[in-house]
Length: 295
Image (cartoon, rainbow, N blue to C red):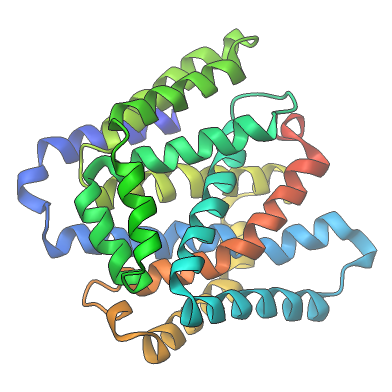
């Protein structure tokens, strides 16, 4: 049902693309999606850690460790933006792959399939408009030559091949469970259509409309024992507000090229800084409970 609604949304966006493409509406939807779902889905990490560690959990110690890891990664962005960007792409590939594939199977998934699927998915989303992607990457990474070389090499791969490889790895994951064939097919239809909206919205629709909501659902079904949305929002609020404060720090002290009228470069840096500790926490949840726990 959820994926079907997303597919319908993509259809509407495709039909109305001429009215919003390249306008402030596009950036507004992107910023709203990140603030409403993107950041909050990672703002539950302290609750997830408490659930996993039980009586051993200490909130103050956890917040210190979480903050230090985020600040350390932010320092890498300031000093070595190209390295930080490539590291973020690798971390994101794993995180997207792990969160997506747990939706389609209750079996143990090979790390090669997880990373391979996540990487192909990321390339499908980003290489739809390779020139624009390269412009954004140059803006964020400071035009590092080796980063440009990597992205240019990836852009030479036929774009459709990334989708085909993603579909093959999903098929491998669901092949023994006929109940997952239809959801997987609908998801692939959504994934295929979403990149034909625009580079920004295609990524945002996947990231906030699918990935973030699926992660929140996994947390709700495990940590909160099927509790309602309100409880999730209230628990996510403190860390979400903290993320907003960190965003203002990045905007105030970040590189000039990160501060754009669209706010997207600064938001991208913020998401990357929070991805490292968030990915580690979600990996612990999936490793300990497994996808059986969410059914």
